[in-house]
Image (cartoon, rainbow over all chains, first blue to last red; front, side, top):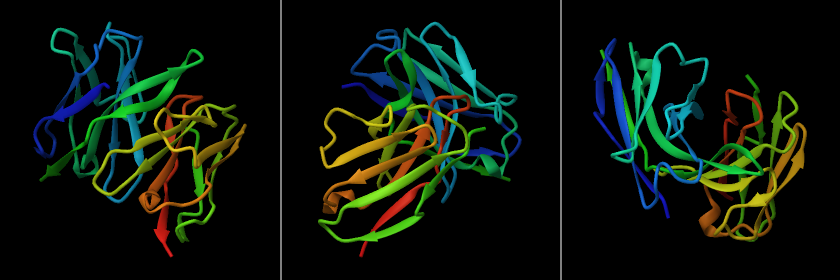
Length: 123
Length: 107
C-alpha cells in the first residue's frame, strides 16, 4: 500500500517561496506509470488541483497557478516537490500530495493521499 | 474551467437512511468523474472513479451513477461512519476541478 507524506515549513512570509516535499513509500515512484500531484484546500473552502509530474519529469499545471508553480521529482529519494513563488495570504491552505490513479488508459482521480500540511502565509 | 456544482450543500439524515448527492458539470465529461469522502482534519478518500467504479475496500453501500453532465452518489443505508463531507471531481478536461462539497450531518 503506497503511502505519501508531506513535509516543509508551516509558515511562509508574504512574497516569499513556499516549498514542500512529498515522500513516497510502500511503492516505487517510477513504477506503474502513475502521475504524482499536488492539491490544496483553502480554509473552509473546497479543493484546488495544482498540478502533476511523472517520474521522468513531465509536468502539467493548473493555468490559474502556472506562472508561480513548479513541481519537480527526485526518483533517487522517491520524492516530488512543490514550489510556489510570490505567495500571498490567498495561498494559505492545507497542501496535499497525492497519487493519480488511472483506469482504461485515463488518469485523473486521486487514489492515495498524504495527510496534508497546513501552510500559513504571514505578512 | 469546468464548474462542478453539488447539491445539496448540506444534508441532514439519520442512520439507515438512503442518501443521494447530485453533482452537475458545466460541460460534458462522459464518465470521467470521481467521488471522495473527507472527514474533519483528514485527507479526502477515494470512493468512486469513472462515475460508477467502486474503489477497492470501499463498502458496497456506496454507489455512483450518471454520465455526461449529471451524476449521483448514493449511500444505500447511512452508517455512523458516513457522516462526512463528500466531493465530486471531474478529470475529463484540464484543469481537473472539484465540486464545492456536500456535508452529510446527523439529523
